[in-house]
Image (tube, rainbow, N blue to C red; front, side):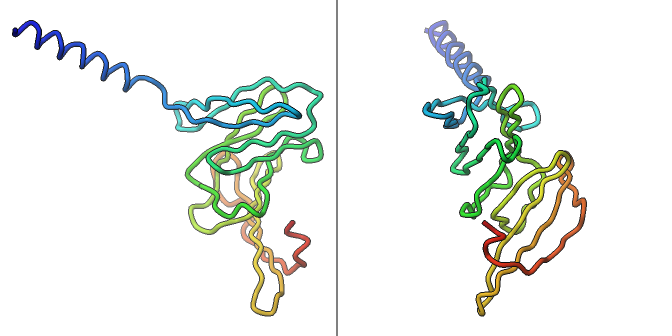
Length: 169
């Protein structure tokens, strides 16, 4: 009886260890032209998620939805990620990047924990976050702040520009 209990305990322990070592995956829906394909997002050693997927040169636009946040790539943006301004619930704890040279890797880094910018786009070295607001008179204002792409530090400081709503689209 003791051997049976020890055997069952060993099997349970082995199963628990195997379960703990199994990578946690999240589904990402990556839309390429006419095809919709699901890919697994595997956590890396730094807690960043990567999605590796072959990209054919025939595709001019890619839309990916990760945890409810839509990332858009198109030819005009030259491979840089763009988050439409209707998405106001960005999760700054989640990290994603789009690199369209050979594969799609989603990683967004350097977002502030406070504030809710509606638009995010990246130049080769930094993210620029833009928040659009309208006051009681309907006047639109845009607040822009750039962050270093790798460290998340503010690069150019904060600037506030009064512009029409069209500038925030």
